[in-house]
Length: 427
Image 1 (tube, helix red, strand yellow):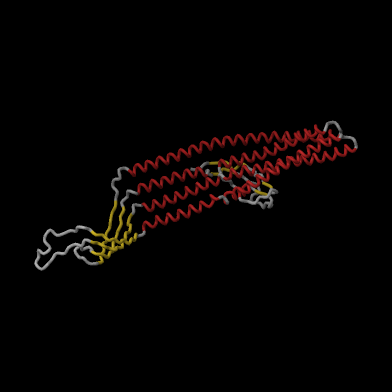
Image 2: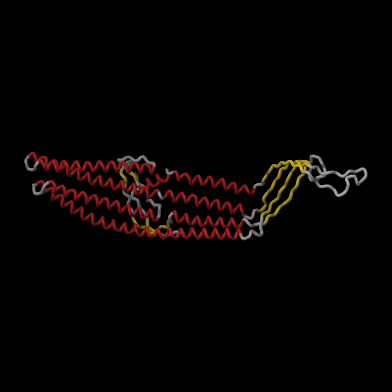
């Protein structure tokens, strides 16, 4: 079953050459998956399945067994007349002991289709196991998304605060000159110094936090990511209709097919089976129990086995498998229902951030205008340094909110696509 999805993720410039100090979200996804311990399991499952398949094929090979035994019995078969009933001839007496060394061969002629069904079941089981690994690995993308966008938010916050610091240092030079010319008071200079120290402290805290998150992202992706690395903000666009099911949905379908294969194998258990056999032996006595001597002998033949009545065991097993299939179908239906709820929530989140970005852009324009006016008023002595800092802080906070909401908008879009597809199309 496939789901029609009207969506395409376009990451601008993924195929273009990128500077060595930039990092794409897709690169982090790929590296996190390829370097995770689970990634090797797909190949290990394949190797294990190949070995079991070869064992199933070996069911058609002849079995060859070497057997040996020695027995002694307290009583043997005796003829119901005296041994010397015929004059001059004494009837032989069976020995009380028996020892034999034999080579037994058996070749399956028809196994009722069990080997063929077993191979199909093995192949189906392999697909289920590998898809389960795929589901586990795809969950790494959500973890990568959280760290990647957290670093982006910290980087944008750092840029906005650095702009504020540059503005403060520029105004500090103006006030310092004004103090020398007795235009500003020494207290104004102290206020500006305190604010600059406060901003530098905030930048230091952001740097420490960013360093920690970079390390976490590096550990998750097994990549050597330097703190100077610039993370590229993905650009998303809803444009093209594609058919891509979630890995979990594929897993449920494969589990149902696997149960179909199990049901087919159960049905084949009751089919008739035919074989030929031979036993080549050397021992005492041989086939003639009355000859007390070591002799070679052999037995060949054919056999048929058919379980015509199993007290409804096969029927109950088939019913049990059908119930298990219904359980899987119900799990898939529950997954689809929860998925639709999550998608609705994430679409609402996208709309919220789109509206926030529009409002923030208007606020930033107004705040920048107010800050420029406040700077002019400060230089003309019309407002205090504290008043100017308050307006500058308001502008900086507005810019941080805008950049944060822009990043959160892209993150919400990527999270929506991650929830919907768990895979991305890169152009």
